[in-house]
Image (cartoon, rainbow, N blue to C red):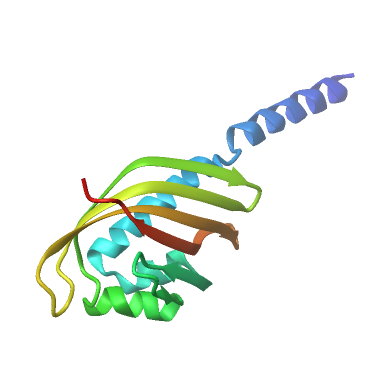
Length: 147
């Protein structure tokens, strides 16, 4: 009888521990999106590589679409340089191993060979769970109308 009681106690403790260790995918995606924002600001090649899928499709508001290596090279080289990036109105919807992130993106830029500028965009990001880590699979930007 003591063994049965002990076994029940052990199983209850394991179940409680398992529940406390459950993942919060929305929080994980939010953290990945914030890490990506920071990596863009720092032009950190290793971080950008770690946060993006090899199958990345990165769409700019101009219509240009880049793959992972081109996107990273553009940021690291300074051809696309961000001085500030402010994210507002962010929503995150997780569906299994995919997540849709939408937000407003406002940034101060100083792209290589251009005058400093600002951008105001609506962004759609698609994140995918790969090897237990959220990676950016697709991104599309749309210019906000000037007011």
